[in-house]
Length: 334
Image 1 (cartoon, rainbow, N blue to C red):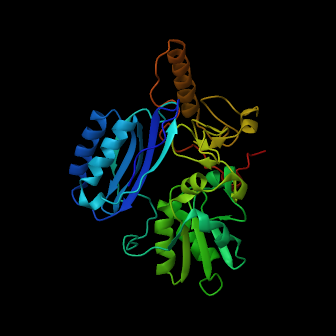
Image 2 (image 1 turned 180 degrees about the vertical axis):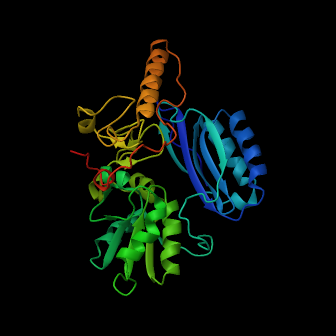
């Protein structure tokens, strides 16, 4: 497993994303060791630990990322960890967090074990032929706001705002007697591991998944042969990347964390750091006041050339009013 990237003149920050479904014991003890090591290397990002495995993304200098990957390789459980690497001009995270969770990707269904069985992994060079097959139903297992800014040709969305809605989508829309061939994809592959395992448990026989996810496809597939349309949402300060894995044109709403296009930002309902067309009428007064003050403090820090921690990637906060179905499908309210 190589962790080296071509050394460009710019973009000195390496972003590494990886997951592994494997039985883990003593997650709290591992969390403490992992956090200490990452901090000693100057890495920033988020790693999730659960009894079912590990998942996360970190960023930092090439040497620090290499050291972390070696840290994992020294553990037989992670000897085959296969990270996806990209580069950024600036650190996309503001702090280092290692969290213990019930699941590394939340579906909420017990007894789903991707370490035992998953769908057939299809490499990027074979993906186009698969989803071009008229008998194949192509499913985007990501959230609606991710689907809205970019997806594969003819793909259908499966979730609104959370991956734990996937089982309901299957119950209401899929039948193993009718949908005999299913191809699924997500950002880096982890959601498809659980989704495909779930479909196999439900009696679907031909289940395929894009190996390495969208990011691997964009890296391996040439632009002229790509079936990808739009940008790919990523869970860091870059917000989205293009088909060349360069930072895209979207920014993130501080309040609801939806990706915003240039058109969204031209709306009268867009207020930088406070609200956007998708959530402007769904904030409580206390939330709005808090966001206004926080944005003011961020502007003061910027004017003083100081860092304002967490300015681009806030923790998700529940809105005073839920976002409507139209908004979740990427359409701003009238």
